[in-house]
Image 1: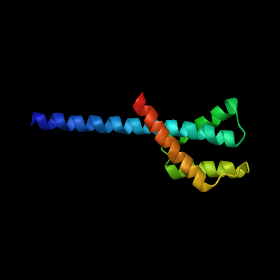
Image 2: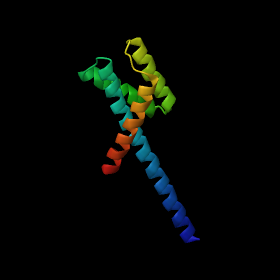
Image 3: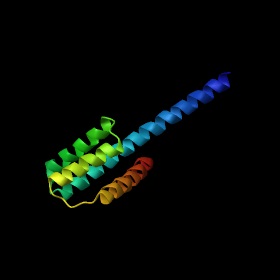
Image 4: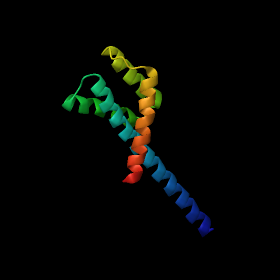
Length: 106
């Protein structure tokens, strides 16, 4: 019985660690994404950092991928920035891959 409980605790710890790592990767992705979007919209310095923080806040608030995409789409449209839906989604995927690699390397 003790072996079963130890094994169960091990699986729970692994699950929690993987969830934490994925959350950190998504937050890092959103920072990269926010900085990329800010650059496209002509923001720099504190304006770019603030925009990136606002995108990260969506992840912290448990927003899903579609919510983040729609936020970027709306912001690009309001600033008349020509970026396609496909490009936004591609960059989201690319930055998530980069962020996961960075987290694993730490």
